[in-house]
Length: 241
Picture 1 (cartoon, rainbow, N blue to C red):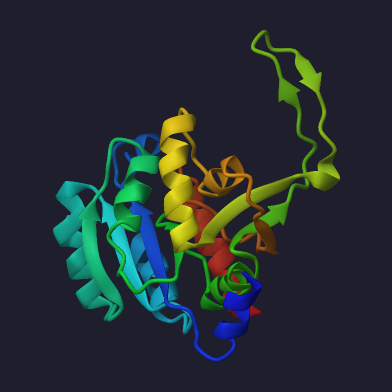
Picture 2 (picture 1 turned 60 degrees about the horizontal axis):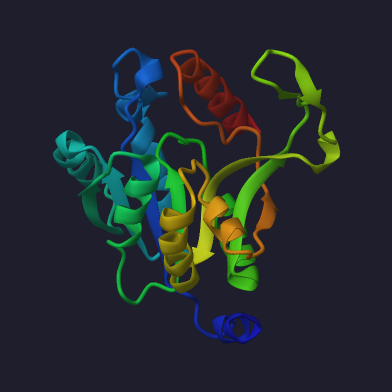
């Protein structure tokens, strides 16, 4: 990996972004959250714009529901997303959707950045910081330290133990990996793991190290209706800084 990093000092790696926007939005009462406006701009459009404006990103692949493909394409045209390579239909699970997106990136891609389309407040600078760490280490994810005390609970409702808070981090996206290694690890994960919601879990299952790039608390994921005004307030506060 060190040799690859030295080479990257002279030629920037080709980084493909896979934006996953194929969820069921079950907690949004049937409304597709990726098309809801955050201060006038749809959630997924904000995610697309961040990757469009990140100099380290070479292309974008979007994974969405079959019924939303045309709508995503129209949004990309409206917001002048020139890096969009393709929009593909997702699978039955998030893991299957990610796999379809990863398999759709260009053959010349060196690294892949996987991003939740429902994290609209990501900024290009944070994508670049995560990418730099991934280029150096092979894999990196944005993450923030957990500030609440976490309890590991039993099914009967009682606490089993309390993990040390100083060692706990909340994973965000993007999560960026060496593409060749990730593809190999992904195939093993589909054979060995029942399911996963975090892409770095694949690297961990393959006994590979993942670097924790310091993220920002405002990089929230839109999951329920109350997240919309929260995101707008966070956006307003960020723009006022």
